[in-house]
Length: 275
Image 1 (cartoon, helix red, strand yellow):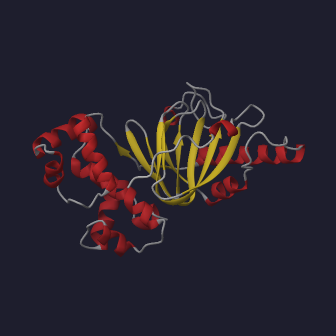
Image 2: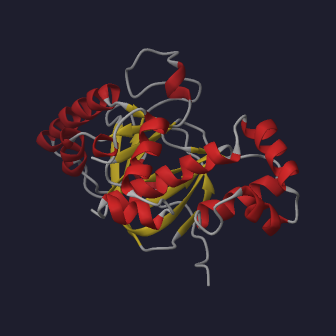
Image 3: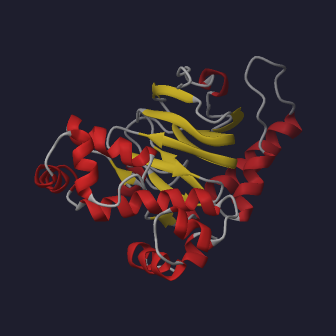
C-alpha cells in the first residue's frame, strides 16, 4: 500500500535572503515517503547523507544517492519519493527566477538553467554537514554564528561551481501511454528484459512503443533503459554492494558485461563512476 503523499517540507522556514543567501535544512525521510509536486522561487541543491531519494520533474527523473547531488533551478516543479530511508540535506540558494548559476556565478550559463547531477566532493559534503539547519522563527543568529555561516556558504558555492557534472538522469515523455511504461520500468527495471514484454504490459505493439521512444525521447528503448539501470546501480553501489551482486541484480550475465555497459554509457569504468 502506497504511503499518502505529503506537502513540501517547510521550505518557508528556510527562505534565503541577501544576508543569508544560502540556507540549509535536513529531514529524515522513511522509505516510500512521497512529497507532492511543488516549486520554489529560489534554486535548490538536494543531496542525501544516507539513503537514496528520487526527484521527478515534468521531463525527467533523477536518483540521488550520497555520492551525488542534484541542482534544481528556481521555479522548476519537482516531486520527491524516497527509495530507501534517507537523511536528506537541502540547500536553498538565493537565485531570482530567470537567472542561472549558484550564487554569484556568471549569469546566462545555460547548464545551470536545467537540472544537473553533480559529483559531491568530500569537502562539499563536510561543508554542507556543518551548515546551520535551524529554521526561521527562533532567536536571531549572533554575529559570530552568522559570520561562520557566510564563510561556509561561500566555500559551498565555490565547490558547487567546481563540481563535475555527471551524465545521469532519465528523460520522461509526455505521451501518457509511454509515460506509464517508463514509470513501470523505473519501479522495477528488471521485470522484463526486452521491449516486447513491456509493450505487452501496456497493451501497445512493440513497434508503436519503439516509435514513441524515438519521437518523444529521441532514443531507443535499450539506450533509455540503460540509463535506468545505471541509476539503479548507483543507488546499490552507495550501499557498498559488490559489483558482481549489482550486475546479477540488474540481469547481466557477469560483472564484466555490466562493466562494459557502464564504460559505453558514461565513458568511465565502474570503479570511478561508482566511487
